[in-house]
Image 1 (cartoon, rainbow, N blue to C red):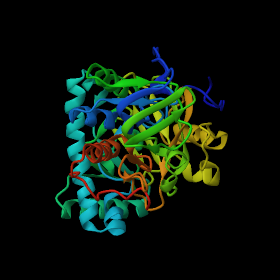
Image 2 (cartoon, helix red, strand yellow; image 1 turned 45 degrees about the vertical axis):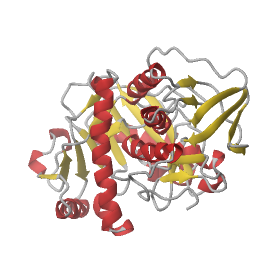
Image 3 (cartoon, rainbow, N blue to C red; image 1 turned 180 degrees about the vertical axis):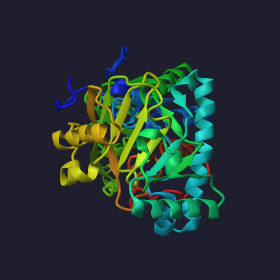
Length: 402
């Protein structure tokens, strides 16, 4: 399709390849733990549960990685949604540093698991560049770098003349993170799902949960249109849809983010992942040369608060202009899509037992668009709760009723 045409409902780049669906749930079932959601959070929870000797049954309304986990920018980055100096100002230095350390550890864990399940090739540790678009943002980049350095975290300033050529402007400045990179999210999560099944997990796709999980005797009952799952405990990991199944998590709201991808262009245009304009725009160049670009959620305004994953024509047109004016790219746009993610005003992810469930239901979500790594951290905490352990990262994120 031509780059000037804005068409809603196209398949995300990451999911545009053959895929054999798993069967839906057919009737009632029993399980040790029922996990709702087969995205980054749900599959990480399933993996952490298997590590503790618990066999999960995983349900998803669509295919594995069919939601936000397969509709994002494909970034693999440490830290919280706010930039580090902003996180310090919002939450204090202790929590900000704990989140930074936890996500750095999680990156290492995820890469080790990816190697274990033959999915390491879906990650590219090419680094990530925070790009200041003007002199005012350059001052913020310096503050960002100073806060990281003060707490012993890596981050290297990149002078204007050393920026990638297509991004180079005299007033710009970069901050590079060598520990970050990119991931083909659908391939990674589908490999993780297959490995979890080999270890004893059961996954049912196209099985929507129709009501919040409820206590059922000494366990939990999870209702779907096809039947009910009775389990000792349940983990709800649906990010943007969290409040629908966990009303106590009403602080997490569903938000639409827009993306597009081009036909291949000459390699090396973007040698690393890029966050620009305080992270509002984000982009990478895939191994086959495509530019994957997202952003302008602020342009979408109130319309971005929706549970409909339909691309915004206005935002897509602005992304087209960015391709042309900022990235000097006239390649045709081949994919346009939107993803629904969970946002909280704080903006802390939610993680922990659901009030009134006696610890039988644990929820996680609300990553404010930074779910790949933070979901792994939250999932480990959720699995520890279910297993009756003291979570290593207890208190790192907000309680579900906060």
